[in-house]
Length: 481
Image 1: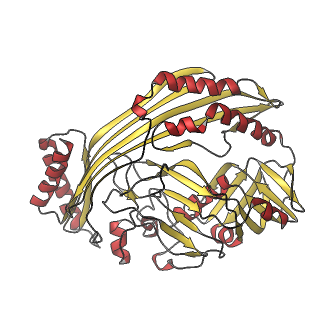
Image 2: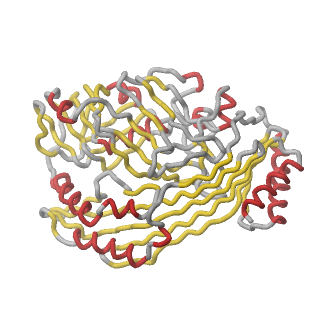
Image 3: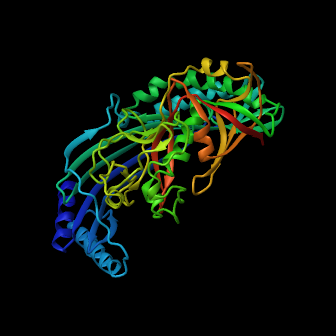
């Protein structure tokens, strides 16, 4: 039925004179179990199903959606879109056109061994209770009196078609675990997540991903590790140029915030200015030097079991790895079909939407700093005096993605090539060119972190991976909060 309605929507749009049309049936189900201080809270469930349609009529782009799945409602939706596009077309300074792309017919899915629908609420709550029991007490003189634990899954099913001839059917389940904890030491509270800096653990696929994480052992082990940061009292040297090593979770965040977002072509062209911010980059800045030859950032939606996994984007374009920064130069922007036409190139498949009633917009998938050839120990040996920021607790960045600030959680002084005493809340406040220009070494140990990327209006929280290895920055200033 859904495929018939998608075909009907496209036929109706063509009958009304649309130059281009696409329709997407999307069913999204999200189930989350919550445990607060050992006590189960009501589970949350989101079940959204409907059809979203976009048309180009006389150079104007219009989007609309309905959850009333009948031919009558689809016809009314198309009528409204054509009317809106006609009105907009009269005042447009520049007409919208999509890049010419190859049509695809395919059925694809994320690999899953243990279907998420077969996992009971009781088993999820039991898992959370097992984890919580290990945190409900003292760990190295630190207690966790307030604990919120969440486990759940999402299933995203789509059928997409357009007037170019693409017909794509997909299923992507995603599983996740996350927690927010208040740690207490000597009467002083501190909000943390475990593992530190990792907001979420999980990926795309079946429940076997959660099983393989072995959370009842992993979480208390990480909790013990984080007590060093909670108990730290020494401050990092202020107003002193130091060498800095960032842990994979921190470098992963920077790849997303200070490369991925400013490299979104809709931001660069000003389309996202009032919604998610702007970019310090301009259309003519493709190829500009932003950092050292060790600055290497990519975005790849095709990584199996990643949170941002997909094989085709929501404009029917085949997914591919995007090389955003290569040897210190911006070599590729994230593009959809409209921005690609503006730049005179092909789309690189960066258009995504999280629900049937959300417009497809340019999004990251899995953004990461490429691994290098160094080991962590080799990086250390060459530092006389510096700071190792293994994980972060706080960050912010301006809306043009030019000035940024990262506050360390687990952090240590480095002296003569050795990790020494822990330091409390070191602050790396730096501009984007200075950051990427200061990198002189990348380790081999690439790690990925689950995250939710916010963008759009209405807001679209898209599942992504961020990734990075240990990296070394030379001669930067580190402050203290």
